[in-house]
Image (cartoon, rainbow, N blue to C red; front, top):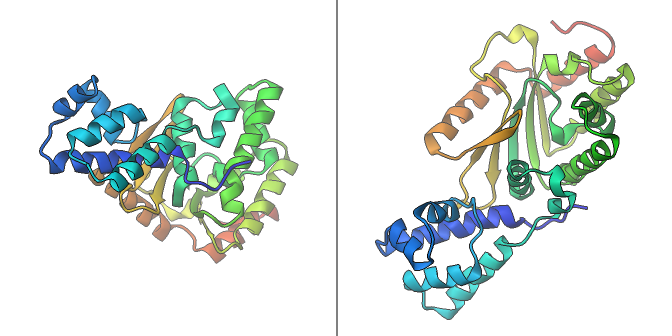
Amino acid sequence: MADESPGPTVLRFLLGSRLRHLREAKGITPHEAARAIRATDSKISRIELGRSPVREIDAEDLLTLYGVTDPAEREELLTLAAQAGQRGWWHRYGELVPDWLQTYIGLEQAARSIRTYQSQFVPGLLQTDGYAAALMELADFPPNEAMLRVELRQDRQRRVRDGGLYLWAVVDEAVLRRRIGSPEVMREQLEYLLEASTRPTLTLQVTPFGSGGHAAVGSFSIIRFESAEVPDMVYVEHLTGALYIDKRAEVDAYLIAMERLTMISAQPRQSTMIIESILDGGDSR
């Protein structure tokens, strides 16, 4: 079962941001910081970007270099370093969760809100067990592994079901009409989307066929966090990995694309009518 703590991934981002601000305030270069902990410049970059944990002994050396002498401040940051070095609940799934996906699950666990556009499949956070299992079958996963992957998806969905995460999902109409699994699996999935759409923490929009073209060339998610110290991040998954985009200009481009998608898509009530029409065998166009 997933826990409700922010998780180590976002704590690494917080710690990295704090360390970078401390270093810059003292006018210390990344090379000087790296030398203090017997590491490379790229290691300092990964730590400050939250992409690599920092050993407590290295955190102590960096704080000393940055002139942090107040016992309370040092204790706070060293505790943050210890917590950021722990493993998240998803590690129990072992090799089923590659490094790139571990990062995303960690961000997902700590997110305040996620806005996602999906052009191929129902968003993972809204998939039924039957739909998820059908996708695993398409990917030719062994039955035991497929079952564990579905279980992992259930754990990831917990915050959505409990209202701890606000989800705004924009789904292309083709996703709803593309059969994954049996007709019964698709019916169950569409009925679940109708049920879920009544939750106050979910906004569901459908981009109908008649809406015309748009700038989004593939699926993506925009993740927003509680802490202002952790910037918005864009997640783009591909066949063998994922991209994590946090440069402000690039994130802004995705935000604009998402805004345009929400404007050309059907509003929530109209979207449920499209889903109902598909369930009834009708044509929403």
